[in-house]
Image 1 (cartoon, rainbow, N blue to C red):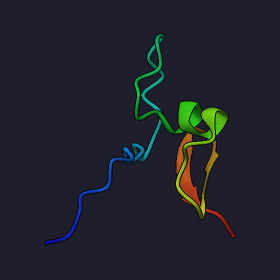
Image 2: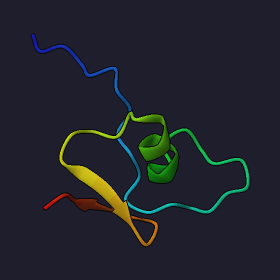
Image 3: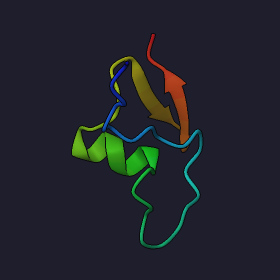
Length: 49
């Protein structure tokens, strides 16, 4: 049985909510919780080159 990942997956695009949701890619980037190999450009989640 595979264990489920406790890390939340980021949304594909920031919803620009005033409070910033927990899965916001901008928030996750700032906190350092964004998964390896990803970055945020123009409020969208993209693969890092």
